Length: 534
Ligand SMILES: *[C@@H]1O[C@H](CO)[C@@H](O)[C@H](O)[C@H]1NC(C)=O
Ligand SMILES: *[C@@H]1O[C@H](CO)[C@@H](O)[C@H](O)[C@H]1NC(C)=O
Ligand SMILES: *[C@@H]1O[C@H](CO)[C@@H](O)[C@H](O)[C@H]1NC(C)=O
Ligand SMILES: *[C@@H]1O[C@H](CO)[C@@H](O)[C@H](O)[C@H]1NC(C)=O
Ligand SMILES: *[C@@H]1O[C@H](CO)[C@@H](O)[C@H](O)[C@H]1NC(C)=O
Ligand SMILES: *[C@@H]1O[C@H](CO)[C@@H](O)[C@H](O)[C@H]1NC(C)=O
Ligand SMILES: *[C@@H]1O[C@H](CO)[C@@H](O)[C@H](O)[C@H]1NC(C)=O
Ligand SMILES: *[C@@H]1O[C@H](CO)[C@@H](O)[C@H](O)[C@H]1NC(C)=O
Image 1 (cartoon, rainbow, N blue to C red):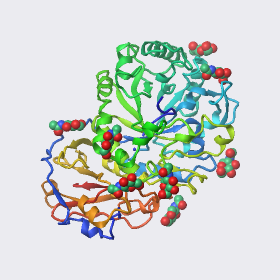
Image 2 (image 1 turned 180 degrees about the vertical axis):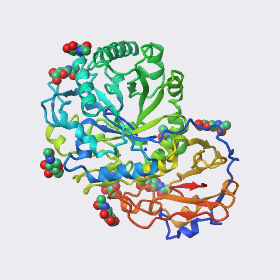
Image 3 (image 1 turned 45 degrees about the horizontal axis):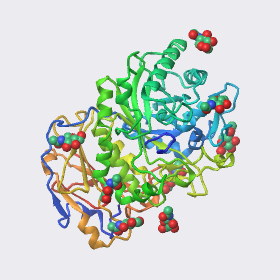
Image 4 (image 1 turned 90 degrees about the vertical axis):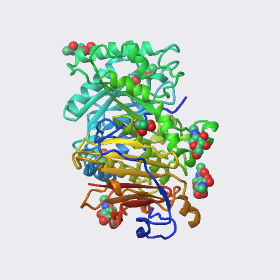
């Protein structure tokens, strides 16, 4: 088994007291020659959705992240505003995950009541009308993917859940409905051991036909898939297989989804390789996401979008993320590379899962959440993490949202630099801000520079790119950096985007926007840079 629960995801550092000045056009670092980047989008993605960097929240933990109507969680609200400021829209939100498959709407229930199922372990989550108030913490422009219970095999639960969502969320915010979570893991649990792609497809068609008629739903409103397993030949069901089985023959599907978990700590063998060095590796990231290319292509061929819920996902307390790996700045570099590459290969949106170790534990545990080691922020104080704050990976969402921009017209292309395997370079065209030529360029240097790395070693990792061919005549190219004292840094107050940290959700410190000198930019190891040409 891979993880459970839902799914997705993402230096002033200047190791040795070097100044930002030195970074700009430094003559010391290795010179990198980029292949020529075309003035028009070439080998590029589709137009990038402004909501590329979106979220998933474990249903049972949404209240912890959201606060309540009278006291919305200030940190969550502020962090979401930081994203909306950059793209003009709030990220999409999917309250979902494994707790959906034991969830029941009760019009007379309070916001959320959690209890144990008779089979032990898994909670039943009963939610009432007030549950929907939790969504108020997100920007008004945030759309909701609403998940309903499929696991229980009782269509009335799904019917009641969708009906309530229409009433309490409303069509202006509802984006799509999802049936169940990771249905490829149902076999031998809530379904017979032979539960197959064809069985899923038949049930999906039957239920969506009934629900569409019964609730007068618009066409093309359901998300199909949402499977956990990597789409290898061993996967019991994939986007490709359910399309083959006829899932898209009744006009109800809006988009397809699958989940990605690049690493896991659920067993010793996989735990051993879940290291920062393996994680923050451009080749590993692209090779892994490339597994989904046939799935994405199948969805597009069917005229649908493809989304991913991805992250490092774990199924129990003992393996809920990985300390000193997913709670470091390294996670920011992993996220930035993963999301930018995901956009490049036409994943429409990536829903980074925010959760905590709950479902399989006792009811007391549910009341004192131990946030997952990979959460982008810790919304309330906890024993494990101390004070509420953004995690060191939050800045990746700032880099990515600024790379995406506000137009909805940006297109990405990976610029291959084979002689520098630690460099991930993404060209970004955006006709809304520059008609001819690249508008932005993202550079991630994922060479491992720890906090304790020597100055000499750090110097060996720095690279200088000559971007002068792309600078517009008469215009000053500028750059913002995503930095930390090291890849292993865990202190959010020392992790910065454009010189500012975001531990409490608002920018602290002076903003630093660098001016390129002679079109050159130097990027240190374990650092990200976004260059603006327009
Ligand atoms: C809302 O949250 C605040 C702060 O946590 C708490 O004091 C209050 O009792 C909550 N209100 C409701 C209705 O739960
Ligand atoms: C379905 O839900 C009912 C009521 O909550 C519960 O008793 C039953 O155990 C559930 N069955 C499954 C397979 O989850
Ligand atoms: C929807 O289904 C419910 C439960 O089966 C039924 O009571 C109701 O009449 C149906 N409504 C419509 C409009 O089909
Ligand atoms: C990832 O990268 C490392 C090198 O840093 C390599 O040794 C490893 O085999 C790669 N693959 C995986 C699955 O970690
Ligand atoms: C993480 O690092 C801290 C401090 O360096 C150490 O005490 C702790 O044991 C480490 N945890 C793991 C799981 O390696
Ligand atoms: C085109 O882009 C893809 C990534 O989307 C990359 O893997 C491939 O190498 C690129 N091809 C060329 C010729 O640059
Ligand atoms: C960086 O630190 C990690 C542990 O935090 C260690 O495993 C790794 O070897 C270090 N790498 C370098 C290049 O110092
Ligand atoms: C966050 O901290 C800064 C000072 O660094 C302060 O100006 C700001 O008001 C704080 N924001 C919140 C939401 O507490």
